Image (cartoon, rainbow, N blue to C red):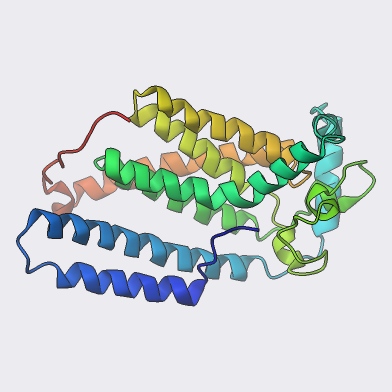
Length: 278
């Protein structure tokens, strides 16, 4: 369902081509060439990271033994802790086909789309803040992939919950059928969907003073609603994502302080002239 089809090979080729473009523009001492080179270099870096992310995703999501048991254990742990039942939230959309389809579509497409839009906006409007938040994305995603080596089936697959696999029922599943890439489906904890959306919400509120900054928190709330209502994640998946994001934040700050102590880390880089709002 997602429009984004950049695989490992394509992402690598695009990254190499953009890197060559950035290097080729260096001899031109023009403002436009410096801007294009900087954009090409950053896009190449992101494409390279995207290729690495897909490789890491394949490496970590290669097994599913114990995934169902772990998912059921998480479900029962939520009931023991009196966490609100995911079924109560799903009932809000069941019986409203258009709302269910919209939720399935948002789950399948808004994840990568939202991150791409966020990174482009941040680079264009708040470039001085861009490296810090981009590094946080990398750290959070890497930590989450490591944790996801422990397979956890999503609530839609464990049975006995009353939940409906809405994407399968409405023919909108990102998986061809249950059994295809089953290991990928057993990567519920933590929810990278929720983690990325929370990161975007924090960044937009931190960097911008425009009224449009509220789109970030709105995306975060809507993402949490959708991943639970479609039975793709437990409530605790979102809690785990927030905890991993907090840890990634601490690690990023520690690494930044350590880098600043290095001789090359104390080089003063002129602050780019960019808009401070929006």
